[in-house]
Amino acid sequence: MSDGPTLARLQAAELRDNRDLDAVIVGAGFSGMYQLHLLRDRLGLKARVLERGNGVGGTWYWNRYPGARCDSESHSYSYYFSDALLQEWEWSERYPQQPEIVRYLNFAADKLDLKRDIQLDTTVTAARYDEAANRWRVETESGETFTAKYLITAVGCLSSANVPDIPGRDRFQGKWYHTGQWPHEGVDLGGKRVGQVGTGSTGIQAVPVIAAEAGHLTVFQRTANYSIPAQNGPLSSEFKAWAKKNADEIRRTMYASTNGHPFLMAERNVFDVSAEERRAIYEKAWQVGGLRFRAVFQDLLLDKAANDTAAEFLKSKIREIVTDPQKAEALSDIDHPFATKRPPIDTGYFEAFNRDNVSLVNLRKTPIIEITEKGIRTSEKEYELDIIVFATGFDAMTGSLLKLGIVGRDGVPLSTAWEAGPRTYLGLQVAGFPNMFTITGPGSPSVLCNMPVAIEQHVEWVTNCIERMEEKGVERIEPDEQAVSDWVDHVNDTANATLLPQAGHSWYLGANVPGKPRVFMPYAGGMARYRGICDGIAASGYEGFVMDGETAGSPIAAAVNISG
Ligand code: N01
Image (cartoon, rainbow, N blue to C red):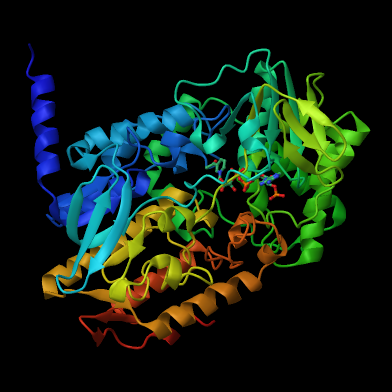
């Protein structure tokens, strides 16, 4: 018998026996893995990741639906903190597919030797702050308890599935699946009658792939959506070599950009150019494809009239592509300005509606009444189905945090502290929850940014903060209530200065989950500006934070220009 399994068992046993830690990190995606690396390997702390899944990958471990692919370009969807990782890994396509991203994260975990401190199949059910001991007590579904000075949530912004509570769902005799909880063994769609509810980024990726396999696909659309062709394809060896050689330059561009992508916003406004020139610019951006379309004018999210020109261009493309006039009308009848909901990108989405086996139901005209034994019944008729796919999104940004059962000082649950919506300082900390850090938490750029860029900035900021605390013997950090209020106001003001809140039904506002407070959750001031604010606050000695009961830092609001 080889030593392998025995050694693995011993390591697992050691891992489980050692439950008093410096830091518990929840989640083994991009953020939890990097956080573990920095706390363990840079600061020398005893840190452990607790992960619900049976493997690393976070959101990419779960989102295995047909067509799942990242909308960020692969050369920018990577850890940039490590040249070794950048130089060794090779992406195959312009946008990485889900299995390739999971392979990448396993590669990174192995390279950094992270897996020995990642405990899989471990669902956190409660995390309570014990004030007397100044420790977090973290409980898991299997009955284990861990204690740690620091609790770091790395649970992702889009991990808590939103399965709509449509009457009759449980009596459906076929099978139903949510895209974010897709079975790991896959689903045989061959020849089946499939109904898909939802046409966000996920649904738009899934439609063409499901249509190619299913007998018939019926798409149930509540809100028509814009989409831009991804123009995906294999990466040439020249491009791969260029990306490796120019990693520093790419990093600089991502850091300077509003959204953390490897391209900058053009410094021109929509009405700086003639209508003819504008059309040519949009046409070129359509051919180039992807999220770069959003960056061709700098005022698309600031000026409704400017936005209308992009919206009209994109609607005209839908009418050009979709041959059935009724379908074209329903697909292009879009009620919100372009990019006020996260703009999807696709590979053959609108084209799929030209297939004989794809039909479209406009729920704005004929809403879903119920799910029956046989399928979905709208106000018009019953659609018989074998499989229902819910591409209905997530209880975004707060859902996964609230599921952890977090209780702060004085026994106050996070759900109570956030009753009227999330309240954080910088999206990093919550008043009354000492030593808890929320990676890409609400109030930070997170989902408005290329995620790895937002994640690396947060993880590095948290690590520097903890390093400072450990050096200076600081036991507790949490934000000052006033700093939280000012930050929440700033997040709101920043969103209100854009068109973003105009998509009243967007998940950015929590509007997709019944009963969820309507608060614009991500920070819309741009990643580069946000990074500057966070750096300024750290440089001031952590203005707005309270350390061991003392107000920290020097006043620097003017220097970091929070109000400006
Ligand atoms: O979810 P969504 P998603 N009856 O909330 C509809 C990221 N992502 O999973 O708009 C009928 O955007 C809902 O309709 P409406 C990305 O950030 C990233 O698609 O609420 N329909 C909508 O059409 C993205 O934004 C990648 O009227 C119902 C859809 O379901 C985020 O994930 C890839 C309904 C939900 O759209 C979420 O996208 C894919 C109901 N009861 C996704 N409830 C990457 O590339 C909801 N809908 C990284």
